Image 1: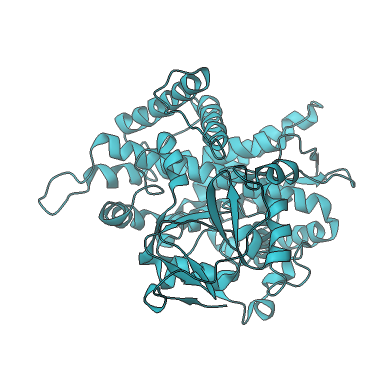
Image 2: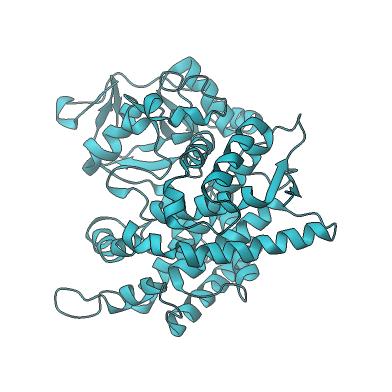
Length: 459
């Protein structure tokens, strides 16, 4: 499957196959009955890797093949902008990196990028490992007292503390619970607007809108406090970078509002995706005792019971494969939305101008052409031999192309540290017959009622 540029098709033809639907409703009933991801997978099996899903009167073009993803995100990326679904996030994130386009995005990215280079990120490992150690000490203390732990919630708190300390140089304990509650509420609000046919502006004072505006105010308040306080440790350099950046005329490149939008974007995106990836990984290890045993043996051999360092992480090869395989099956960024500027074609199918397009890592990561037994958890998928020859866009949990996630190295550092230190201390289990109900919201997060259980390892 290969894409062709817009110049090669004078008009749209060879329209992609459509998911069956009803007049006015489209596939809304099937979506409600089956759930989005189940409907997409069933449609991919019967219609192929490019098809059209209509909800109400809106056509949504689905891309489920690496070649189509490469064409849109890299080869002909200039013909595509962020989809209109991202505008729903503007209420939550403002004009941060995730939302902006064009020159503004390029300026924002170039200023923030140095902070996320490996040489800047890796020295944070010692500080982060101490934070994780403190949090896991609390987990152990709770278990010793016979208290049950909500693992999904605990992963969120841990992720929030790490991103706050590493990016902002502050301790999030004072505002952590409030900030986590508000970001979760905003995510739920934004997701609730996804399939609404008649969407009221947030300025309309409905009960739901008023509650969302309250939570947005809470997030803003914490961000403004962080900016006013400035960095409180050597790792808090991002705020200084943004505040001290100059434009070509030597004037400040960003005002306080723009800095706040960047902080909120990086905080929310980093917090939710890292927590989701860690939660899914623990679930998969609970389901696969053999993988957990092999991973535990590697951590014991490389690190023992001391705090891991950045150098240790380079030698935890199986741990890296476990995380990669977890994000293959459950990519936190499960869909990437784009909108075509001009007509184009993906493979043999015409895509009209101004079309809403979803590129689905969730579908591509499970494509049977590129993955052996694609629905099974098998870290060996990421050995050098197994990865050789696999298309670049067969696996892209952090996005791809020019807009690949700016924080991918930081996220992997956090995940590796958390998982290594978890394996030093705990076993995790889940009922053998448990199967999670997927909840594809802004991120693909584990369900709230996932019954993971921890027990301490013997010293």
